Image (cartoon, rainbow, N blue to C red; front, top):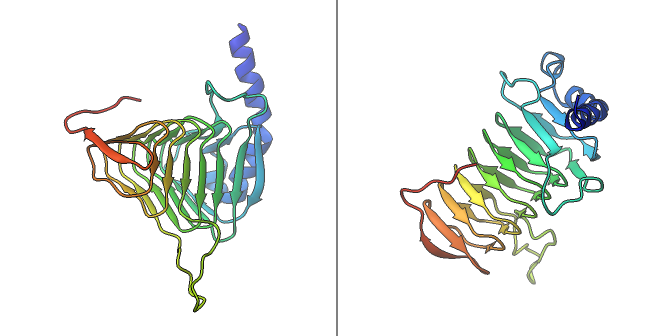
Length: 226
């Protein structure tokens, strides 16, 4: 047996306690016993509240949280953070992966549809609603935030900066170190260039880049590959 296989077995054994805790905390016994979600041992559970929903026919270990290798992450120290409050709801599709060092802070509704792939060290702060369509590819050190986190009120005490949903369509590729802010809708089959700050919505079949984001060119008739 080579070193690579031994290492994989070692990491698999180490993930067992947190994986069991997660599955039996969130799912009924008949689902939990299948271990549909596996959790890296490098995971910190800040809050295991809220609800998690998965497909009824979800197979074992097809939703992976905190695994993978990313060029910019030190896997020895980069931890996956799970912080889901009582009001938080996360809906996973099939074959979803959120990579090493990522951070989920959820008190709203977060949905990740089939085949979503986050490479690593992404941060999702969901206070209202964030939806990722099918087959989205999200690179490292990206930020998604549907809230300003601090209220701003006018003279009458009414909040002027409410939380607003983020909706990402199917087959969207989001480049490294990009930020997608509240109220944004990104149409399907689009590409967001690295280090882009998206503060307004864009139609599908678009290549978007810059700070603030602007339309660069059309992506009509093209597709990216995972």
